[in-house]
Structures are given as C-alpha cells and as structure tokens.
Image (cartoon, rainbow, N blue to C red; front, side, top):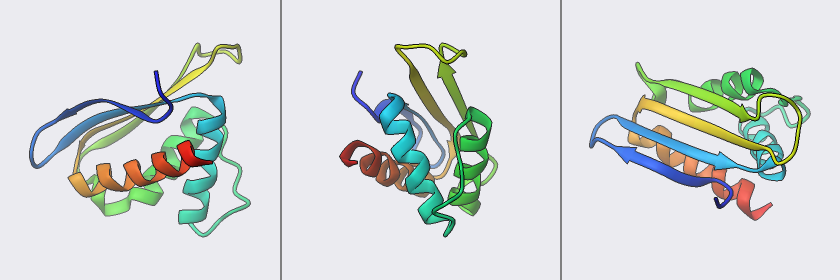
Length: 107
C-alpha cells in the first residue's frame, strides 16, 4: 500500500476517509502537523498524540466528525503501518489532511 494512500471516500457533505502511512511517512506527517500548529518542536509520536494533534490542526473542519489513528501491529515491530481515519468530517478537513499526506509522501 502506498504511503498516505486513500482507502475510502464517501458522501458529498460529510466525508469518511482512511489514509495509510509507513513509519517514515508517519514521522513526516507528525512534523507537518506540528508545523501547521506553529509548534515545530512538538513531539508527536503515539497514535493518541497524532490524533489529538490532527484534531487541533483540522479544528472546526472536523465538525461533529472524528479522527482515529491506529498503529498496526499495536506494538513497536516491523513491518509497521499507521492508519488515520477521518469519519464524518467536512471535505475541507479531508482536503487539508490530503495536503499533509502529500507533505509526508514528499518528505
């Protein structure tokens, strides 16, 4: 699966979408989110920290939707995959997540 690839997209007004990242890409995504928050030194390295930082970065665009972050496997092992799922968010939130995913892919 390609880094930051979209797995699903549904609905015209609220969007459900999952992005998949490898270990390097999730590190780059964390740095991109920290920059968006104006906190480039912020350490974002666990699923819950990434979820909270994305919620801060996407702010009002989330609306009544939610963000989930899962590391597979849950323990620190290789190969490792991270899935960021946006559920019921605005298309603006999805578009901003896509921009951050592009940053993560491009390094």
